[in-house]
Length: 163
Image (cartoon, rainbow, N blue to C red):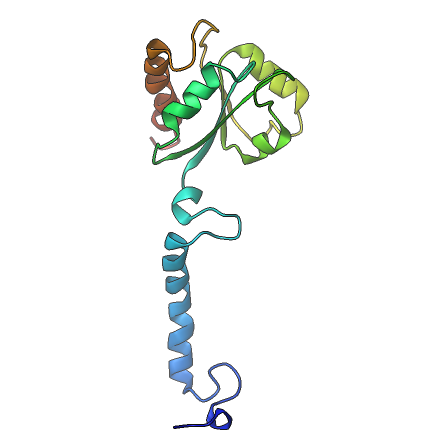
């Protein structure tokens, strides 16, 4: 049995140079495997970092955008949130939402215009798509769900560069 004083001091000090080089070359591969299984400090796993952050926006965040959030919440290629442009929205839109989003999907042109007017410094880097869905639907209305299921993936994945 060796005592504590018999152990090499310093990282990999007693290992031959070829072994130290092998360990260093394997570190990126090990890190990649760990990222797949464990969250990073930002709390997102590798799979989550590869998903598209989609922010759905309507006026009061009561019917349309929460429906979209619910419909796509388990989609393997999307992370989703919803918010409203009105100060009285159930969940009002904030700067953090726009910083988080890779893509913003609004229900009407006036939502896009409001976002651009209120957050001009944050909207230059994030595409805003207008879905043209009028405020005629209740939460989880089957017709609304059907429209969202047809439109959202078409906007996100069929019109992507190289797609």
